[in-house]
Image (cartoon, rainbow, N blue to C red):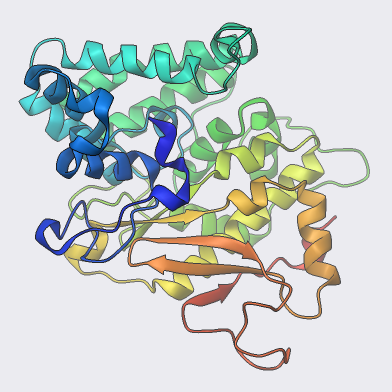
Length: 371
């Protein structure tokens, strides 16, 4: 189903289908899962292998792909707010038929197996390359998801975060109070770099910093991450003992975990956390805080694939060497934006003193963070 990862194939919502999953008429759906869901719902005849199936088989596929609108990786990597991540799944469970969820998880395994094309080697991604601990976490997450039948989205997400923390740091208490959601989400997202994240937040006892550096996150970055990552994307639900994010819209930093996982040292993790905080701040410039119910029920996707594609040192080096801010967040539509390296060409003017276009915000990577 990754065919729509090619942006040339991403569909624009037609007038007769608007709004669709929060997208308005004429807006292009860049989320490849949701884009395919739109095609299956309204233009299934364009996919012959789908169109020739029985109506019951089509219904089952639509359920797993569009009705659920569930990205398992977001859940296991703590990548997304509960509203966007779990609300469609909860609604789907309420109207699912026997076998639908089982089909979804089989679909997930085949999706993983075919993630990289290796026709001579078989399903190398699943059999050889995929880390066993990560696969185990996917399997362990499934019972938590079935709790959605009787519990709220935020309760399920938070209980999963706590369970993961206890497995990662069995000798340390679960974080509490302001910032606890950010700490748990980021340690999970960082995978093998989890101890570096926890140390930089001061969340574990005896967490060692690299010799001669003594790093801790700045107050501004900690506050930004704490407030933004506690947004639930659900107006009537907040996290237990960390209700910092009672505003909207919430943000999903797409590929944020990949930025953290690519780091090789604690110093690089520190820089990556600063970069993610800077992306949140840029996102808030484009989507200012609102306390309306509609805003608190919505989530905006901020795509940082451009940061993921580079070593974090190179990201900061490019910013330092540019004549004007090199990294900007560009608004795509009412629900998404992506980070771009500009070198000034996408700006309204070549002058460093003039502002960027109103649909752009600077991702302010401060030189002092490049330790």
